[in-house]
Amino acid sequence: MSLTALLLLSFSCVALLYALFTVRRSALSFIAVILCHTYTNAQSYKFDFGLGKIEKGYTQVLPETKYNPQTGYGFEFSSNLVSNTYAGTDALRDDYITSNKPFYFSVKLPEGNYNVKVILGDKEGTSATTIKAECRRLMVEKVETAKGRFTTAEFTVHVKDSIIRSSNSESKVRLKAREYAYLHWDDKLTLEFNNAAPKVCAVEITKVSNIPTMFLAGNSTVVDQAEEPWAAWGQMIPAFFQPNKIVVANYAESGETLKAFKGARRLEKIWSMAKPGDYLFIEFAHNDQKPGGNHLDPFTTYKQTVKEWIAEARKRGVTPVLVTSMNRRTFDSSGHITNSLGDYPEAMRQTGKEENVAVIDLNAMSKILYEAWGPVTSLKAFVHFPANTFPNQKEELKDNTHFTAYGAYELAKCIVNGIKQNVPTLAAYLKKDLPSFNPLHPDDAMTWHLPASAFIGSVKPDGN
Image (tube, rainbow, N blue to C red; front, side):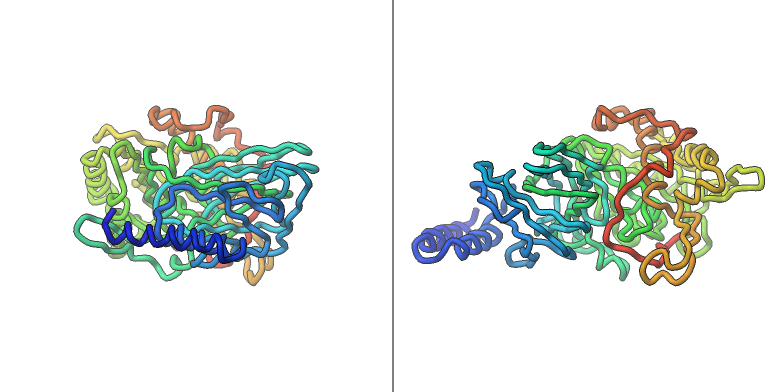
């Protein structure tokens, strides 16, 4: 630490001691938070939710605590927040905050990987909570607690920004206009608490640096879709991994091709963070096949580009994993899926064999999955909704490329199957209690449920 930094830190401590004798408790809390964010690089953040007693070492969060950059934490986009408090000696569990709508809590954090622990429950009631992060990234599926019981939900999340940091200079990912509003490109972590009775007692966030990262490079079928009713497998897959073992970093974006992904410096961004022991998943085809400046021919320039990425990953000690793109919803008259992706899936398979790289054949599994659903049930997996199903949606939605949360979740299960079969080192990080999945027998679309987030749109993502 430099002399200047030491002097600043010393001054801060003196100021804090002085405040102990001259200001009230509420003002002291505010000053302490400001000093923490200004002069230290905090590795752990602890928040006690509710109106009751404050646990030592924690920062109190009230229903009216709104996010602002100065304090660096608070609620956003949220309404109907309520705090229930009970008499007792357990400061963390004697109170909680809840809502009858999805509610969002943000913490200003530098880019990196973080382990998050959330205490859930109700001293005199039950609870049911689903947790998502950033742009609707599924972290914790429905967690229920019985009356008077508590549980700690734990997950590991990647926080990113668009800055590419290198030893010589800084540059930026070239974001598309709509990406500036995405929650996953800002300078904070946003947590969404959802379901029938989400009751949050406390949140603890700790930075981690010694775990592998699973980077995702792809298009709209992989990206963390920002708005309902769209979803992609990349935003569902984090829920299948053990916490504090590995983290999923989704850098996919709608409309991208291999060439455009690199041109926008998204690949450079990944390389700037990648370290030995990490993984890079590569899935492109839907947009690469289209004519234009970003077109790549499947058996020549497409394969060549993928091989270049593989070589660069290996040079950095990163394990590449190839994913053949899932089919579109294109049924023939006999109820079978027709190939709308041409030679690209086969080109990816050949590349994997030629380079001795693991291939997850999502294209083959998706054909089995779609045909198991059939033309009618498959509509539940794709974005097909009548006009006026959602606010400001004046026209019918008929999208045979992009998925609902249900469809994305089932495809994520296919990816998990592929990991188990082809990437054993990565499979070791999957949750141990995952039920087996056969795409020939998908989950029942009528009983499967994931509560919708508050962000809803009517504009189809880029790409088709």
